[in-house]
Image (cartoon, rainbow, N blue to C red):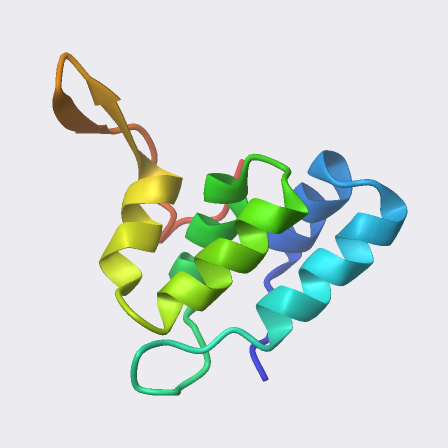
Length: 96
């Protein structure tokens, strides 16, 4: 079971309804990586931010963590501009 950092909990509360925030928290608490180990804080943040407030997208990203965590990092930290990925944020750090 992953421990969710405070900044991530605040992000969930700000971007999901109360009922969805509870479901999002449950999804993230159970998130594991491709080695079946609890997902790191960075990966949890990437999944949440990459979901853009969609519970369906969050569930998909949590499942994707089990296959290739790099795709989840791309969803949370990068955007494509001019056909190239551009890093917009570093989610090793708390979400401001």
